[in-house]
Image 1 (cartoon, one colour):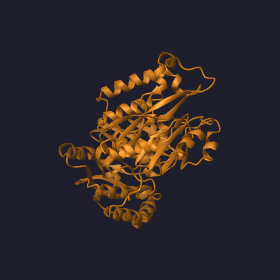
Image 2: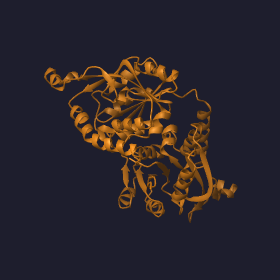
Image 3: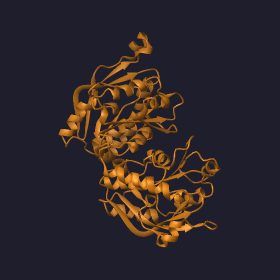
Image 4: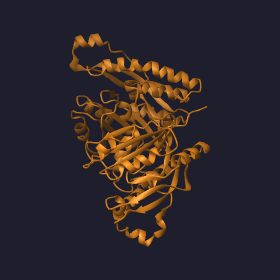
Length: 453
């Protein structure tokens, strides 16, 4: 008998010391199992972190700077391991049966990838209700249009992307609009399964800003001319020495005007983020506490808005024409899911001749590497996110799952990427990757046997 799928609950919180314990309790009181609870503290200035650390949660992520609810949710989702993702605002409560009812519906309806529920509003004692409640008392029973009630498959989430950090309010509605625009089948259930609490500090009062954000979301989604063709995700951790060269190699692509570049700084302690920001508006910079390259890549995918995805490690360099050659294949061959090319290793110049001889850089070879790939976003979403448990072997794990999913790869004869060998990465790439081989091989065997790995 197959085990029930893991559900990840992401709770973003800022100064929620009054509510966080109740929110987590409402999740843990769900009868459904297994559930993973991820709390992301958005640089609270009260006792939220101390309280959350004492609660029965699986992961507590503490952001050093306030980034807003969109970024906090994205950071949590990038580390989620569930097949289904659901959200809970810290001042809201899950009502009994919510997770079971939503997972049951998704299990019975394979064509559905997101399910919403009704919500009930509770105005806390001593609070003057917002004017919109007086004018529209029927909204005390909220219709299922707010994504705080949603449960979404990880595949649909990767296809549509995560929350837009530029929205401080109405970010959930913009996300839902985009999810439906991506082709996801979104179903709205009649059950009331979320209690939304109205209090003096929450954003529900800020209706003017909400309306402005909603109008911006509608304008953006009705005009697709602003969308890039390719999103390039660059994870970086203490890569200040090499990052600018990597970004320049993206800028040198002949299709650079169609490219969105997302640098995800994985908790660097050097100047990596500042270097990325020096490229101005051509580079979008996201920050997260150090979580590893798999989580950083997943974070970048959630921010990506293009229909094609590419990845470049911060210490590697693309060759001119890389994207154009691979795009030509995908644009003219709809049966191809992803394109690779040839890769060559080179020893970073600062190491000197003696070290270069010892490292033995390999010449051009088929580039089964993240930095060598261009893939359709829809194909990437079918496979799922990068593993956050494999370390440097996250790519090998993803590629094994892609092969199992029968993705069609085409390998070009063109040299598309130069892979840098340097003191900080040579042993990591080889030794750490080798330690993951056995687990990846076991997972591949389990999949062949019909297992769940």
